[in-house]
View 1: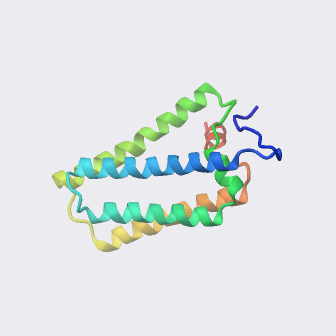
View 2: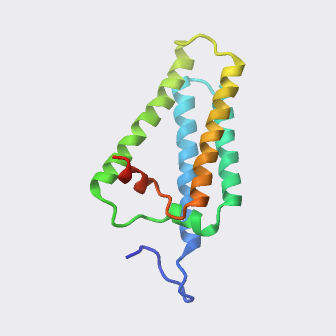
View 3: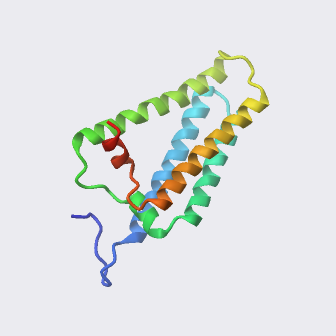
Length: 154
């Protein structure tokens, strides 16, 4: 019932799934950077860099505190996922991508007035708090899954 190949000792191929998760996260960071910098039309957007570096640091910290089994689970191909659940999950990505695009376009065309430093820092604090909550949830609940989250909240 799993796509994981069994090794000689009967354990799932954890390394394969951890590598798959590494590729997923790396792709996400590069795609986010690409969208932010192309839509803004500039490479010197400091708050995009702060966001990306913060995200990368969080990923590194999570890689240290998460168990290999948890990381492997996050990288594993999910089976027995309902078709509608895949559609809902895919649709939830659209607003996130739109947020990155509109943010970049806002920088490019100056739609919003200059934002005060304290607002940027408050946003960064909220961002880190949210990530900390999700990370804590994953460590505390071995059944934590975005697929299950969508199933129970629709």
